[in-house]
Image (cartoon, rainbow, N blue to C red; front, side, top):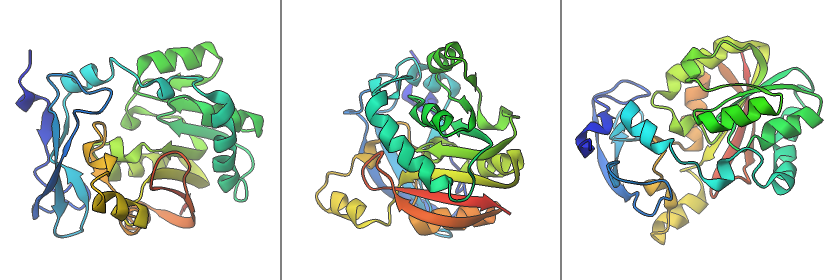
Length: 260
């Protein structure tokens, strides 16, 4: 069995700005997470960058750790899970995009239960997806939707809309991922991202009551507030179009941005 020390590759510098000036802020317990198992470390140690304020885990998982983690899938993340209820929530997500673009190729990164892609089909979009869980990719292909089990850096599919619903915070190096996706978008293409919002009052109340689940979220490497996310998107060549409240998870935000 691998030692815990071999499960995470430490960040020597801030994964967004590259500063070496960061310090541990707090730690979270992953034990209650449904996918946690030995030998994955039971605690996440969170650091904050003193240069850009970004909050990130002390390291990202090795391939060996990811193989263990991806050997299981939460029921709500399986293709087709809760489709009737998720269809309504997915429609509201799509309707954040349709004022700006009503057709084209919609690429969903980390499609999970695929509700967003299935609903985008109903709205007349072409769709494709990627996910790191091979079983989900195989199931989606069986349903006739083009899909890949690849890291973002390996994707070559051009798109008019790219969505990442609660995915960017799972990526070891979000800036590099956004820069690659910027290149995949057609001119005036749209990016939709959702994730928990550290700047929200809900987040602060969860902290105050010691009930914030995100400090122990096993698959997260980053925590973003609205301001830090906006700055990153603009740095990577996107113009913010809208902000909204996400229904997907607690304290979540949804942001639509355009490639410039």
